[in-house]
Image 1 (cartoon, rainbow, N blue to C red):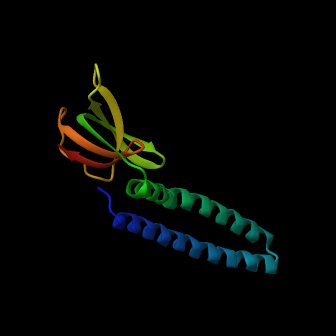
Image 2: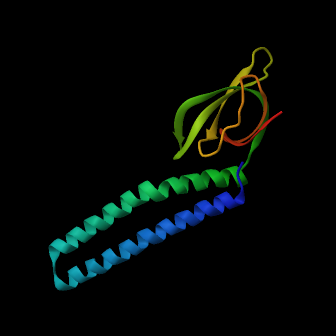
Image 3: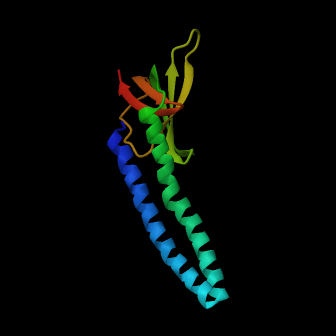
Length: 153
């Protein structure tokens, strides 16, 4: 489901966004230095507030989601994974946000000694979900509760 190229693309996007933020902050820092030299206290205050707000909001809205998704991809590609043969039960229509990444909850049934054991996994919302019906046998590779690979048996 995931490739090294996906991770490289996310990291490249994150780098570009940091460069845009850095360029804007450098311009504001230059205005701040000018306002300190010329002794315009109101401009110094305004630049400081704008720089702080811009850093917080720009990071939180544009860079943090990419950072969280890059961590997810890195875990999926290089982290410890486990495998499970089970049957598909259901896919939740609701979107769950776990560690900053959007998922759909997928429920599977694992054979147990007496009754089947219900297991929940998170399937990446950015990936297309295969056409599965309840009862379809699956092979799931997962890291933590996040699906890394899903194949029909």
